[in-house]
Image 1 (cartoon, helix red, strand yellow):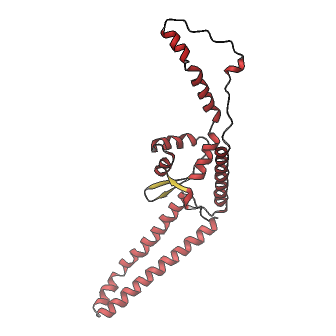
Image 2 (cartoon, rainbow, N blue to C red):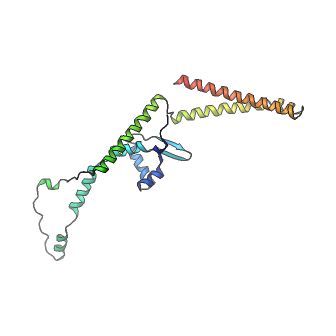
Image 3 (cartoon, rainbow, N blue to C red):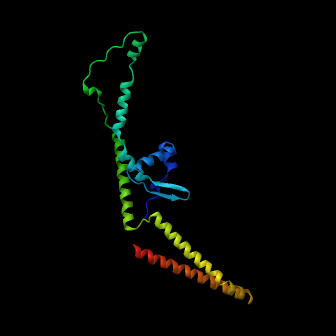
Length: 214
């Protein structure tokens, strides 16, 4: 079972979609790592990240109240036009009218329904995709990168040993060449067939070994 290819994206493409620099995405990835792991995989020289997992962590760590607090501080710190004019003519600024304690509290405005719904839908999809991937890992349908590396090394070793065995037949191959081209080809074909059979048997042994470890 494999996840859809469109769920994976490079940091360069993700930065282009969001209109930010790649450095910003990299910093964001480091900050999100404290809240949960974001799956990655390699595509040639590129590192791809799991977009639904990234968006889910962004949604979980987003603090809309912080934006309202910043907006409220900026509004109270900006002088009024009347105060600026009075100060320019040497007239003392008029005292601020007494206000209730509630006047200093932020007045949040309700989020736009469409944006809220879109964010909720993305978060729901991301959580579903993450749960699907975790289930696949528990079933053994997704193989960790470390296991792939060990398996690749074992396969490469078996193939190398099988090909190296051809060198041991060099004497027979050389002797067959004295019997003419046909005899030479027969000996070479036997060497190739034996090498392929050895590789196939080695692959079968690896499959049996992997199955016994599950």
